[in-house]
Length: 131
Image 1: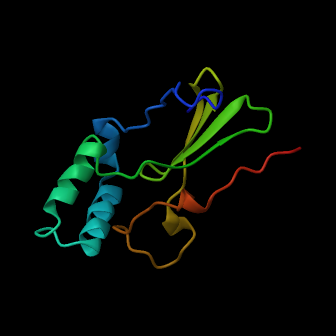
Image 2: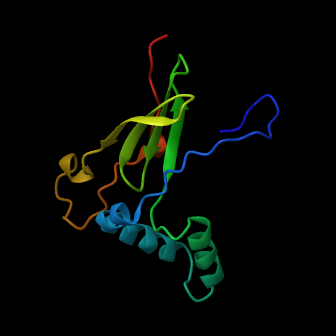
Image 3: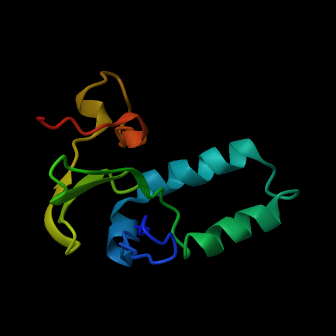
């Protein structure tokens, strides 16, 4: 979060998953790595892959794909694609009020095998709140 008054003061909410959460999300990590390898050759692009691991602090999961304040600016919503969760923070305190694990995609799409990536796809999300 960047303070719009001076554009230099900032705060960070760290949603990097802990190791147990990363292990539980093994299918998501496998699909993330597979997607990366389909976009570039591991041999020719190895420095990019290693740089990406460094930037992500050695996690193989996507992170927050959507982030929005409620209309009254008391709640902050984040959608974490890698963990397939939505987290509600009290704002501006940034304390977790609620974390919801979303259902697997297989519940909505018939015929997906068990090993398929379970994530829903929060990159097309928006918060709808009353005026």
